[in-house]
Length: 108
Length: 121
Image 1 (tube, rainbow over the protein chains, first blue to last red):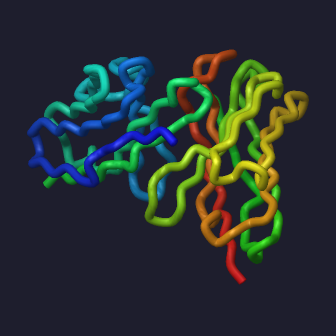
Image 2 (cartoon, rainbow over the protein chains, first blue to last red):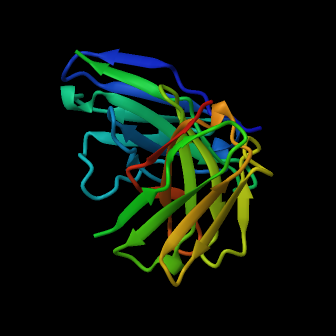
């Protein structure tokens, strides 16, 4: 079955740039998406179609996809950005939806 | 505004059954694919099933295939998940989510708040 691989944790100081990666073979043919999940809450979309930001999402969130690796970048990370971040995509058929294992972002 | 509200979770014994519902409002439900996604305690997100806008296309993750059945009633703006032969590893918060864009389905936005299913004797 198809898998997306993320680092378990990333830590930065406030104001620094945080980068979270997601690797998967089908990312060269399929878009990557990113979700933020704060403790006890439902996930929220922060990036869609590799690099587009939904309305209402702060501009410090950006995304890129270089083929088999997608990256979520949080420029000038704030304490309020502490959360679990999940990448998401589909397999090459488009029928099976897959999440990465999640990355815990610590900002302190 | 767009709202998804899950219900039907609870405590069930191994081998038992449960039916989850998701009530949708604030959008034209029949235009959208819908999915169920779950999250075991302290674990990551796991997509388990989607259904197309008309209900003609349905897919399941291997972990639930043959045990869970997704369905929808567009007249009632509702999504369902019938869960049979439940196991301890099915213990999770179950979320329903709308798939974007309309008529195609590629990503999830928004999500409901989830309903907890606990499988234990």
